[in-house]
Amino acid sequence: MSDPLIDSLAADLTPVKRNRIGLRLALCVVAGLVLGAAVFWLLPGRMIRPDIGNAVLETNFWLKSGFTAALAAIGYISLRQLSRPGGTARAAVRLPAAVWLVLALIAAASLIITPVDNWAGWILGSTAVRCVTYIVLISLPIMALFFIAVRRGAPTRLAMAGWATGLAAGGLGATIYGFGCPESSVGFLAVWYALGIVATGLIGAVTGPHLLRW
Image 1: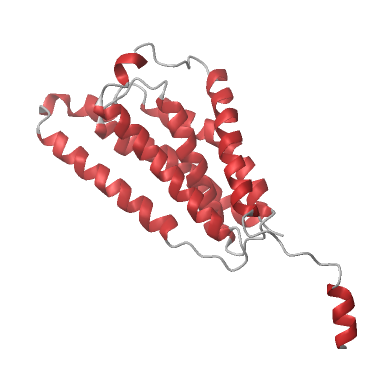
Image 2 (image 1 turned 180 degrees about the vertical axis):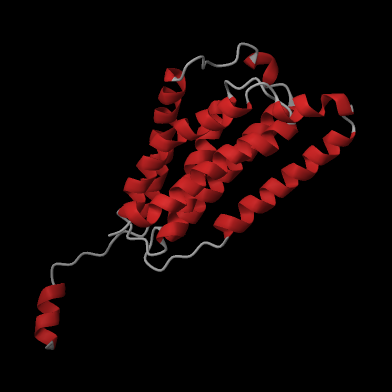
């Protein structure tokens, strides 16, 4: 191919703004929070917990919000890398595992001082299945928004990008759900909230190679 032909093909090309992907993903976070909140209100029996005024004064409430928000942030940051051709983000797996391990250690320390007769209730609570189900249901529409944005960024590691997408969406969905969830034990958070977020991440990893293909 001659140089003049190459020059003519490239003549109308304009450089892509470096922050375009980041801006799209940031907009997805905002839109996802709004959409996730709407889904939350549509789910049976869901509302902001009536004791929210007292709950926000408890350490466990902020530990729960911090855990879910941290996973959402890790997914979001990873997506900024994975949305670009050749992008990698090993932290998308390692950092969530590290965050969960810290939470698990806190849960284990709390379990030691909890009477054995209360262990089952402390871990299972009364809404375990609903917790996982609702986190996934709230997160799926958010994940759809992220998929649209990531697809436009031309990712090449599709399964990993799908996992990071599910992680970001799952973290946001769990954060939204937390404002209506009456469970506050660290054990419940380490098992069921984590399971809901991981389930969303796995859905993203499985569907990513199909939905993110370009």
